[in-house]
Length: 195
Image 1 (tube, rainbow, N blue to C red):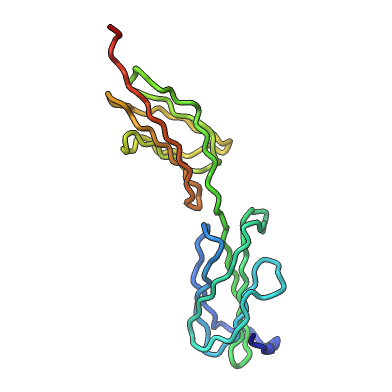
Image 2: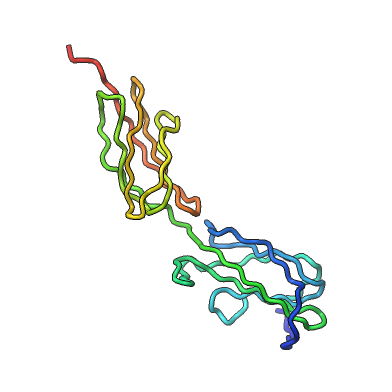
């Protein structure tokens, strides 16, 4: 473990950080950037007074992996993590930057209203409930038939065109982080009159 002291020092502008994605679908993230050579670097997560990283950076570039807290709730946002990066250059000038990202490792909810096993029409109503504001893509035999957004109340519906044979219906809900939930159903299309 590196032990070193830092002083209050005057403010400087020598720390640059690469931006983080708005959403993270993994529990770890790399904090990358540049500092003056031989700067002391601290990285704090949320309100934890203990630094996740504290070391001397012997070059100008750095990359440090930290474990995020998916149960965090910062600024009223579930999964939001605030990362505070502090650096002191060799002359004891201090620079501070703050980043944030939202950890979302959960698949969005998706419940389809029951689809029939067989239809005798050219269209099919596809509806259900899911995570508000997630997107829904509906495919018929791997062909995109609809792209919509789940309402803020959590519901969606649309009619999709069918062909003249058995149809594989695939519904994919994707949340803002990119997590997906999939539902599938085979529907028989029978437009022939009984004999």
